[in-house]
Image (cartoon, rainbow, N blue to C red; front, side, top):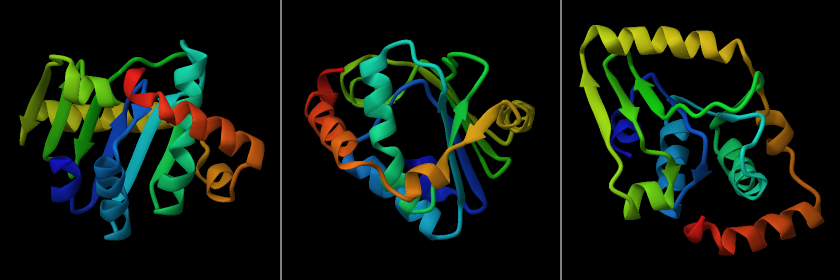
Length: 160
């Protein structure tokens, strides 16, 4: 959340699982609404279908608030990284989900003003070319049945 709060130009994330708290959702929304280019890459092909559905349940709210959502198309992408403003980057085992952030002892490296940050931005630029942007699809809404299914799955999200 500090990466989002301190971003001035952009904050990009890649995560295999996106099961965020309301606080994280607000941080993404506030950054995007303040003019920061906020993007999230998730897998386009799931390894766990239920978690994939829960991940997608967050897209609509994020997209309505200005966050751009991308799905990696070649296969399942298990990277957990972020880069912001050519100054800050993170890389490690931390998914953007409740369990990784609050329950597990995950590890990550925080990089500031180092060549690896600029290298990571280049990696993100290359990865975006292998993704399809799904922002508009989710900004316009979902069927009632899909919303109901996703709401039910979200009840169990902290356990996933």
